[in-house]
Length: 99
Image (cartoon, rainbow, N blue to C red; front, side):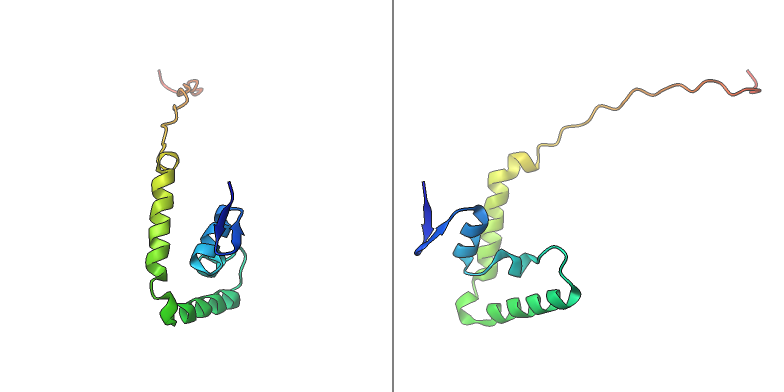
């Protein structure tokens, strides 16, 4: 099945989110290895977008999408299995220790 938003096909989950929000996900989450200068520019651009009337609901939309993703993947996220502890090994007695 193919998914389209407008005239654009969403091939991956990242495509779907980007097309649904109208902005690249990296604008909000950042990119690995970005410099402080790049981060400041990215956050400045994000602030400008949020200041635009068209995107006033964007934080709410992002929060809603994040909540839906957590809800869908909650079983995997919270599937915590306690690990068995290895048996304790006894140390041999020290030489010269009083018995």
